[in-house]
Image 1 (tube, one colour):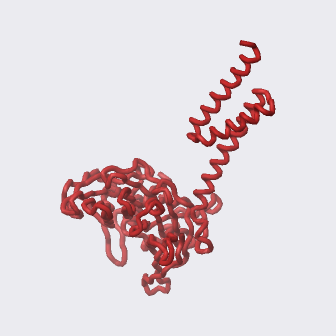
Image 2 (tube, one colour):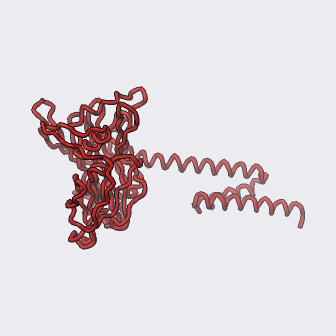
Image 3 (cartoon, one colour):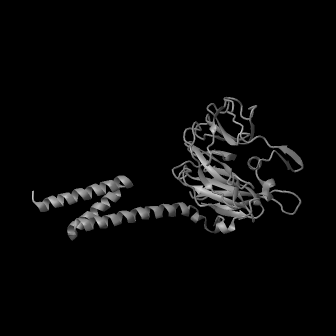
Length: 377
């Protein structure tokens, strides 16, 4: 074989190995085809192998960077079609970090589970609410719920904030979750006989091992393939004094009717300095199963900030694996929200509606009112 032929074969071997490696890395055969188109251009142009590999490497970098930018744009643009109905939530910058005790002004407006978790994190054993003295249970009692008992009758755990969901395609599967006060966690039970008997499954995972769980809500996907759980993951970010509390709204899911769950939850609405998300709720398109609805999930929460509470909305279009940047639906004297998945009356456009609740600031107490927010795709 002639030296020139050997050199050409060697160049071709190196280039083929390079392209094959990129194909394996990107798992994209279309990119493979593009590389061979470039190879055909190289053959016609007569460019040297070294120069060609440089061009090909540049192409790879451009494509990979483009993929990252595209994915970022998709995730960040999840709420773009909501138009003027919502604005992105603003996270506090270091210069805006509020005093450590800013959340104290909202203690009487937190959900019951969140209030208990916050007081437990603060080391408070008794608390007066609405004139009534409340004893706060120990935060870290290691208790395993009794198996196969009616929900809410465990003698060793105080259950509150229960949520229940039924498989829409097979109603013998029922999943329930509740805040297990005294454990600092949220327990999951399941039934395989339509709710006649129940068995403890697990405690929902938290972002950090020492976090507190509160406010769990569960929902099945329209096709019954996924069970979603949204809840709070609360922590003291400063081990010293004073206690500095933060919270994130997280989502965990099960793909086998609640028998096993994710190992690490995904953040749907983040907290941070000057942000304490509370009262999460989750919904799906329960009455419209289909390829375009089974993976759509909606979450709302009340986010307390030093300047007041606000209702924030986030959505997932891939079954809860990734979530859009939260959008602010309303601010001011707002308390609690419920996202509702549905479909427009005319046509097949998917809609999500958030129902909001407010409270009075007139000094006459927390007289709740309800308000309905606009629709969002």
